[in-house]
Length: 94
Image (cartoon, rainbow, N blue to C red; front, side):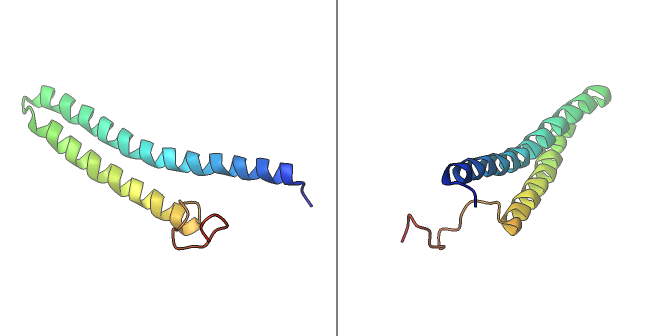
């Protein structure tokens, strides 16, 4: 049986895994928006269509990033790695 000190340390390390998943999901959203913005901006310069392709890139980037973000959040919730459910009884909210 693990000692209480070791259990606390293992639970703390598990928190890093949760944080990593949340940060990765947020980065997916940000990277998609930024990449599509720059792609649209570059295409506007090549085709002299400013600002339409940049706006289209922002829209597509936001939609794709949000879709990926929501998929990641749903996966975390399904796997039990999301934030705790407020209706669940825990020792602190009895």
